[in-house]
Structure formats: C-alpha cells, structure tokens
Amino acid sequence: MFESITDKLSQVFRTLRGTHRLSEKNIADALGEIRTALLSADVNFTVANNFIQRTRDRCLGQEVLQSVTPDQQFIKIVYDELVTLLGKCEAPTLNTARPLKILIVGLHGSGKTTTVAKLARFLKNREGFNSPLAVACDVYRPAAIDQLEQLSQQVGITCYTDRNTKDAVKIARDGLHNAQESGNDVILFDTAGRLQIDQDLIHEVQQIEKAVQPQEVFLVADGALGQEAANVAQKFHEALPLTGIILTKLDGDTRAGAALSMKGITGIAIRYIGTGEKLDAFEIFHSERIAQRILGMGDVVSLVEKAQEQVDETKAKELEKKLKKGKFDMNDFLSQLQSIKNMGPLESLIKHLPGMHQLNLGPEANTRVQRTEAIIYSMTPKERANPGIIDGSRRLRIAHGSGTSVQDVNALLKSFKQMQTVMKKVKGSKVNLASLFGGR
Image (cartoon, rainbow, N blue to C red; front, top):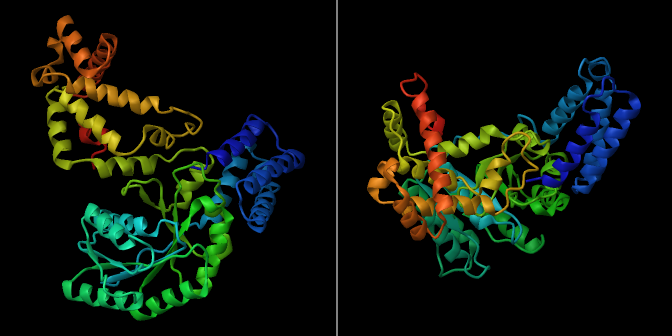
C-alpha cells in the first residue's frame, strides 16, 4: 500500500537525516521533493500545494530551526500535516439508531457489492450487530443479485432479493419492511452503479435515499483512481448527503492520490478501507495509522488487531495452559502457523512493521509456509506430539511424504527445538502467555 510515495518520501528523509541544522534552503529543497512525490502520486494539485504551504510555514518556525534534532522534528511536522490532510479525529462513529440503515452508492466496478458483504461481516464481528440484512437493489448488472446472495451466505448474513421487479426503489422499500418485521438491527442497501455518473443513476439513488431515509450514506470509491476518485466523490456529495467514504482496492501499490485528496476536496471523512480480495480484508480508516504507513513507520496496531481477529479464545487458553506446563508440540506450532496464514500474505503483513516497507519477500515466503505445513502433515500424530523421536529413517519418510528434502525437515526440527527452548524460558511466568500469540 502506497509503496511508491513511501519510497520517495523515505529518500527525502534519508537526505536530511543527521543534519545538525536545517536552513531555509534545505527545507525548501526537501519540500520541493515532497511536492513532486505528492503530484506523482496523483494528489490533487491544490491539495498538494496547500499541504506544502502549511508544512513550510511550520518548518520555518522556531520548532525546527532551533530544534536539537531538526531532521526528526521535520518528519514529525510532515506526519502531523498528513494526519490533518487525511482527516484527523473527524470521522464520526456509526449512527446509534436501530435498525441502522446504510445506503451504499458508487460507480460500476468500484467494488460496492463486495464491500456490502465486507462491511456486514465487520459490523457483525467487530461492532456488535447481531443480524445484518443486505438488500439487493442493483437490478441492472448481470448476476449482481446472485453475487450478493453468495457473498451474504459466506459472511453469514441474510439477503433480501426480488427478481420479479426492476423497480429498485420498491425493492429497497420492501427490503426495509422485511427487516423491520424480522428484527434486523442493520440494513445495507446495495445499489446499481454506472461507468460514469449520469442523471439516471443519480435520480435512482436519490429516490432510494428518500424512500428508506438511511442514517448513513457511504460512497464506495476505487482507491486506484487517484484524485479522480475524489472528483467522483464530490459529484455524489452534491447529489446525496454522504456521511462517509469507503476506499477500495488499496492492497496494490496505489498512488495514494485518492486517500490524500479525498478529505481536502469533499470535506467527507474516509470511514473504511478495503485492503484485499478476502472478505476479512477490511479496516476502519485511521488517519494516524495511514500516515505512518505512508511515511514507512509501519502500523503495528492494525497488525495486532488482525492477529486478535484470527484468535480462537478457547485454543488460546489451552495453549496458555500447555505453555505453563512447559509443553509445546508440532500441533501447536501448526495451529499458530495457520493463524498467521489466515491474516493474509506474509509480504503484506511484514510491511506493517516499522522500516520494513522496502522488504520484498516475494512468493517464496508463502511457499516456505506451505512447505512447513506439508512437512508437519506428513508426520504421524505420535511424531507431532513428540518430535524428539524423529530419527534418520523417519526424517527420510517425512521428506518423501511432503515432497521436500531431508535438509528441509532438519531445518524445521532445528527451528522448532529453538522455539521450544524459548517457550520453556517463559514457563511459569506471570505474563499472559496467550497474548504472545495474539490473544486478548
């Protein structure tokens, strides 16, 4: 996420690092490079210029020119201004009304239907909503209704459809009535999109908004569009009372233009972001965390939250008991490995750590994880419970069974033995051992 602009800003900061005194000239040079980086990332011209002007005014003040660590103070000011640009502390919490009605709008291809399922899953798992209902109001796109039904089933929510009518407003109104009778506590209306904004699209979503009177109106915008996504948001906001924006497709190396321009152009807060294809690749938008990612500082808090979502509390407590007794076997190792896998690609996870944005693990990292799993699965239950009994002949059998080499098996057993040593050192500790593996 944002690798291009992160690399360019990191180069600017490396140039300043160790500078004992910042002058107006080297500040101007650095800000010139940052301005170029912003424009290259497709940030709106006016937004970029205003950002540079605010940053320059602060940098030429006493807090940088007389600072003991001027380079660090400079970076801190850039960070603060990025947070402000992204919308510091301005994204409101969800409306408290029940049922909560959420209208989802956006252009064709922005990911609205998938976002409906992701948001419903998020609200159910993280926000305490017990019975979300998705209402299929897209009657134009082929298979749109089927897609929403399938996604709803995958995330465990109800989906209201009516294939006997092309009247999207009627479907929305009937879906609302159905939800009220069924006691659903949140209703998400999935609407049709177009390749571009036209009067038919705007009129239809306006009519749906009038019919169901949603408390939240979220625009789903493709983050890969750069500042054009912000322009689309502005046009939607002129037609509808938008309460928030959901940026999608941020799992690739997006240019950051949409995220950095959106708030400045529209005044509407970014509420959530989609960070991948999986239905759990969905996060609350935290301006502070995104600014940290853009500056290459990592985002450990989001990484911990991902870990916590994957933790099975019962298994975590069982593991804690085993650790306190000094026991940790291959079954436990496999369980933790699978939890990490469920969090997403390792290459994506590692970039949440400070200073690791330039690390390119490539597909080999995930291949190594798969190889490790294959080796453990090729062990007998007795061998997993007591790896110490694995002698030369067993290693050869395991290597053949997993399609790996004896060297690979030896390497895994060596790493596991080192891990067991670490676990014994924490045996009996007052530390909440489950928390070492993401437990809450």
